[in-house]
Length: 457
Image (cartoon, rainbow, N blue to C red; front, side, top):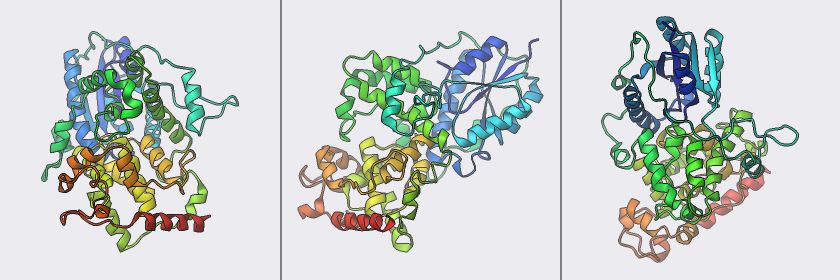
């Protein structure tokens, strides 16, 4: 009998448009495997929200594999070591996988290739990271010229269909039980809001896409309105690879109206991967060394302020609504993410890395490239970023983008306030006792941040 082939899943938990799967099926019997590797990423192991998502995504993937005559084998440990064990146990002659660009996954691929016949395929991005370069052959550091260059290579290839069947090996190797990994919360069970909001897996991703396509042309405006459902909510599905960006691109491009703004957001994922490919430590190191001299606040007062920000108790309703939405659902509206991140960095003068770490643990779409690039953009520390001295005014932003109903949903203490008062109940003189006063005034915070920036220069 033909030796089986291993199919190594990571953040590509789908059967549609899955180049590694197609290559494996073409070679004969396939053993699909997922290795829960907390050793190789070290401090970058998945956060709690991502682990919740992973549990349900793996359940969904196993169901789909079984529909095709296959199943998912689960192992836990160092990925390269566990794959080598599987190959020895099964006589597998080759391992197929999709390429990943996080530094720990690149390390794992190099380690696996030392002992295995590892064949890597592209498929998690619109174009292979590192392939879109300047006229001089250098990778782009700035998004806008990167987008223009990427656009010349679009559309991406037409997504490949799911194989009709997946040939099984003569015998299956032993597999862990998903329940034994304890990816879901115990007591307390904080995932009630997650279950209401999300349907992890390929089917859930398809439903999100089908729901969004008719609204894609309105994304340019609606994406900035927290009270409206203008977002696609595809980010966690894209992060876990339950749907390919090529699939999203082809569906959205055919929608009525101008969908360029949304397609540029899909391309931002590619840009972020290009950044971490050039700067693997971008999640912990400033892109601009000049900002290394910035004196972030530390000590007990700063820690108390950070806890207030985490808990949505800053006295700024739009910030607090976002942070409470994050805790309850594992997701936050994009406009509010920028406001909340800017508030932590500029108003509270707390290191962006503290916020990035919190998002890493609490977001279901926590993505190393996107998370790092977005935080550094907001902080003004990135290779392509907003200037540090550009400080968002959260109260103005809240009114400008009509966030009243959004605040009512997530900050119920303020639900009875009028549209005019709810953005700044302190100024309106109607702040209820149950809601905290502002942790710091906007003008005071702005002056403190500007002084810190001037001193750093």
